[in-house]
Image (tube, rainbow, N blue to C red; front, top):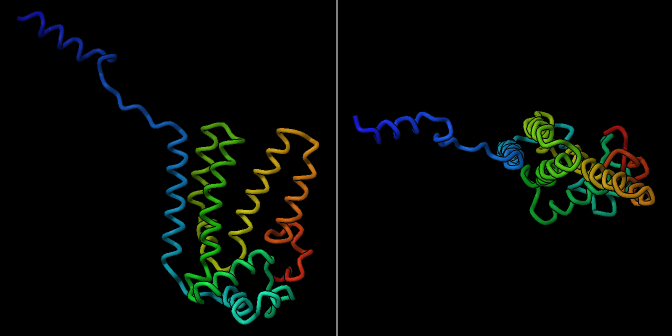
Length: 207
């Protein structure tokens, strides 16, 4: 038997001669999970379901009030932060009053939340932990559902992650910057989130 054939056969059997496809880096996996989460949110948005009662009551305030009138307490025992109301009013004035338009701000907030969560998790977590956290965030049913509801919950999530990113950077750099962190909390709470938003004239805790 030809020795060259034996050498070739033996080399093919050696593990170091086998070509393995390398696993994708964790960063690629993390962003892939984020893309999947955005697709889930887009699918829910394109479903274009009808407004339910609580959404409709908030929407009636947005549709039938001027921007300045949205500064007053809302009708129908509803309430929402001023920033959310302003963005919703701008969407209505610019694009109409369809369900898709009324849910555009929450949907974009959901997409922004997904991207911001990747950035924050990669900053503060180990690579493997970041991958798990992003995966859970991407497939979370409540986060997907509320990213397509004409209420402020999705924008609350986005603002909360922005707060975590800003104040996390403050913790890691210099204690003298805690004033900046406090300013971020106060401003974002007044305009969007629940923390501090009781100071906003248009906020009603019965929402």
